Length: 376
Image 1 (cartoon, rainbow, N blue to C red):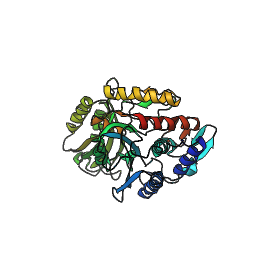
Image 2 (image 1 turned 180 degrees about the vertical axis):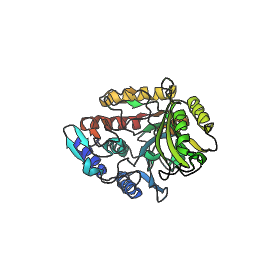
Image 3 (image 1 turned 45 degrees about the horizontal axis):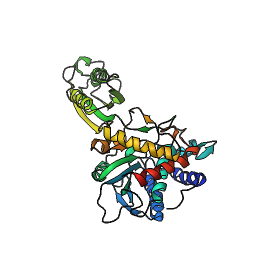
Image 4 (image 1 turned 45 degrees about the vertical axis):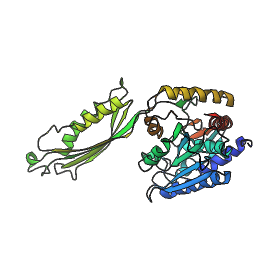
């Protein structure tokens, strides 16, 4: 087993990836990013497979040290190649070093984390160099909900003993995640009746007026004590100012801590009824990601990971439940003990101030090497 790269080499590698912009809405960018990662994985000697998920999504990348005849349940490492940052963000947040911070779009969420995990696995290429076979799955569409890649995630999770996710470590301490809220979306369309706003106002049925009632009902489903949030994120309606609006639509985000809360919110949303006469509601609601519920098995995995972290030179804290979802929600819901937020330490995810802490890279890559090599 060869020595792990120096901090300088880790920085240079992460920088090369950050300079490849890969927003979710750019399949070409995600494809270029996948090609960079594929080349590095193949050069290390890992077995690599690239699968197209369609021209509008980008490829799925799989790398493993699993022997061809090894069908044991192994370690599933999950990561995403896409970012939220549009092409051109490098001009606003250029890839640069300022003190202990390596800046650049996607550096923290989550190219730094992928680089650390892949570097560790590249040191453990030969079958048998890890207690369990390691399957590393990198998806192109996590930031938009993993709709195209979910089936693949669940396919590999079905043969996983553990799940490890490269999402960034939590800010201000580098804690990992054992619980995430489930995420869902409601698309609500209201159909009213148009009429001249001056001459025949009484014959109209305002879709915007009806939507106002529905927005209040939806926002009232928020229950902070229970951990449920409902947010009307976008709304649009009407055509011209002198016509009673016949159409209005909104998109609603909701977050739930457990399946009981999820089922309650889904039921209430599906049972929405029109307040005004002669208007229709078209309701399309789904739970996109099931909740990642903290389990005894995940706590046991955390305790093992904390031991490897101490051996690597840092303390791995457990972060409180987070409202954001990730692909860990899928593996956890399948009963696979999963730890999330094991990626790079830093701050500023989804902002123009995103960065990775350079001083943590060496200990983090050592942690990944211990985790992949010794988990059994």
